[in-house]
Length: 111
Image (tube, rainbow, N blue to C red; front, side):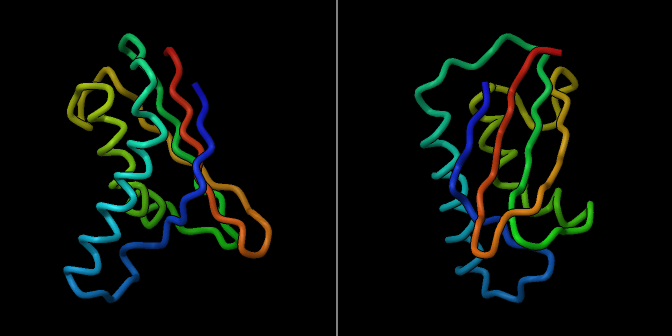
């Protein structure tokens, strides 16, 4: 299963935002991911989940994983497991988009 979601993932570690603003951003990210995966049936475990960020500028690896935290939590919830379940392998990637192009792709596949 491959999903392309129009979602902007900023570097959460570098944002200096009030806790309410952060909470609202995280909830919005989770809701958008849930909207796109909600009607789909989760695959049997074990699976590999590849989370790719598309944006004009790249993030370093630790900021990339941090930016995906809300999305990862929502995918794990959909799979019915905690995000540290050993049957789920999490992979991260990113690719350059055009100016003003922001999106994410979520690929869930068998091991």
